[in-house]
Amino acid sequence: MLGAGSWGTALAIQFARAGRPVLLWGRDPAALAAMAGRRTNERYLPGAVLPPGLVIEADFAVAVRAPDIVLAVPSQAFRSTLEQLRPVLRQGTRLAWATKGFEQDTGLLPHAVAAAVLGRDVPTAVLSGPTFASEVARGLPTALTVASTDAAHAHHLATSISSERFRAYTSDDIIGVEVGGAVKNVLAIATGIADGMGFGANTRSALITRGLAEMTRLGLALGARPDTFMGLAGLGDLVLTCTDDQSRNRRFGLAIARGASAAQAHATIGQVVEGVRAARALHGVAAAHAVDMPIAAEVHAVLYEQRPLQDAVANLMQRSVRAETDAEAERSR
Image 1 (cartoon, helix red, strand yellow):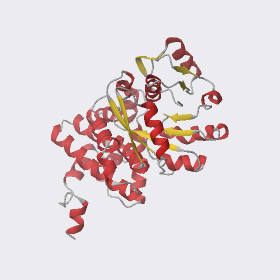
Image 2: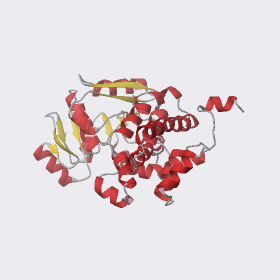
Image 3: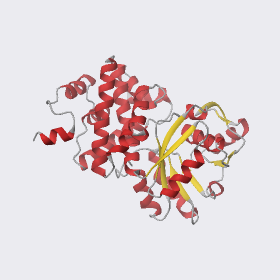
Image 4: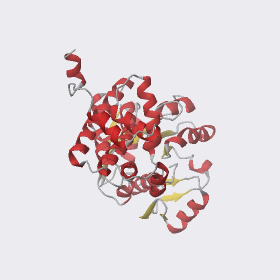
């Protein structure tokens, strides 16, 4: 496991709980030493005890000798971690990641970044779905999706992580699963803002539903299947991230609505808020593919164009009347 933040640690705990030997590597040797001594990750996952089968490994070259490597690093560190991995990656190694989001400069999804850095011969997969790290670490019942174009790899990874209280499903729609993970964080900022402004349950429900439509619209433009967005990595992750305050992106939106600056909101949360960078990358991807994403566009305008919150709300509510579904809109033309 490469990445010793909250999600990387939680995944390492779950693999160990499922009976798999796990090496957990991170970039901070001092933090790793503290984890090895205390058998907890007090900074990112306080109170969660590391199982005996989980070994803290500070040597990157040793950590990547495993036949299966899972990356759980922020999206901005994904390419650099792959580049660090490339010269020491051994033949036959299977790779997976739990990283979510479009790459900032290129607009590429993680699977495309991996192909660009490592080539297309390495078996790859993505893990995504409605999963808060603290609940996974505590062993609460959880389900996620493992997506890969290599069915054997997806099945092996899903089997390796599954246990009595953790269920993994497989998919071959890696694009759809990654789009769901990339878009939901931006929409969670939107729902956090709405709730912080006191708009209530009606607004939250509308944002989630119309946000799902935006997510699906973009996914189809990029080659995903529509049914993926009704699953765990689409609707499931979207509902989780938009409705529970364990979500850093939702808490960021709440803080913005209450008058905090982006810097103040980040400082309060104390961890990476993926949706902030994702909003900028998503804005470029949607424009490049001529996909209408009004909620995501207003989040971008609030964060990067200094648009007042009330103006963003007015822009969404005063859009011209149209059919609810794209299919209906197409038929009415």
